[in-house]
Amino acid sequence: MFVSWDVLLVSTVVLAIIYETQSWFRYYFRFTLYISVVMLTSVFLIPVAIFRPGNVHNTVIVAYFLGPLLNALLGMKVHLRNPENFVNDGSIICANHQSCLDFLGMITHWPTMERCAAIAKKEVNYIGPFGFVAGLCGTIFIRRNKSHDSHSTMNEAAEQVKQKKLKLWIFPEGTRSGGREMLPFKKGAFYIAINSQLPITPVVYSYYYFLDHKQKRFDPGEIIMTVLPSVSTKGMTIEQLPELMEKVRSAMMVVYRTSSDEIYNANNAQPSSKSLTRRLKTSAH
Image (tube, rainbow, N blue to C red; front, top):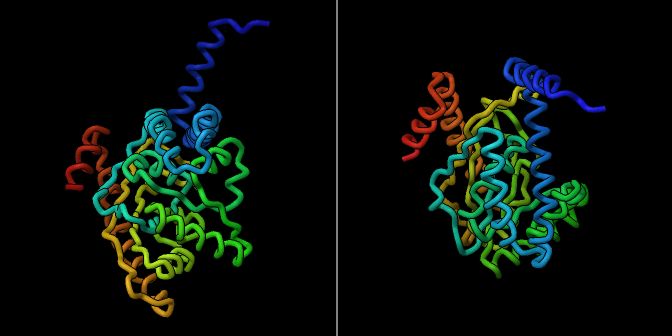
């Protein structure tokens, strides 16, 4: 039994109206689209990445396809500020974790970071083709419920960072915050940094205004990623770990609040999309 073109046309119009008028429908539709595109793209990229398993350069190849595609489909723009603050001779990147959209920021600007590996919880490895491709791209998986295993894995990762001069991306909150404040930081990233004497490069995401899980709202919007000056750990000891954590978190919170207010106020002024983009770029300089 075939569906007539008239039925298809009417159904498309009805869905378009629901999409534009119902935030809950837009929320689920956009997340379904986001996850589906990531999964589908992962399937097609497996044959490309499988010839260099565990190679961080695979992520750059993935990023060239997936970043622009996701941004175009979701109507997103990701602004990267101060990329010159990235350290190329090995560093620990500490970023706040707002939602699964953090991956969009990472994949959009991965070519800028180039040699970078991410640390993720072991469960990510089991998320279908995405988890498989993540492993092929050099993602380091840890078991958070087994502290001995996770510390051992992270120390091994630190050695790779030093030897191969990589950047190691870690979310020190450990889970998504999704609000106006950052969650307390866990010690892992800072322990690695001090133990290996690697600098810490803080990265701050700001974008919560267009995403609200409680109200089921996920609209097109703009993300600011700010790279802060690196914090040296040369000569530091484990006894100074709390001091280092507080120093990094405090610096990140200042930028987080400032950039969040900036993008929120720019959005509430209701300029055109082009005007909003121009305002954010202007303020970045």
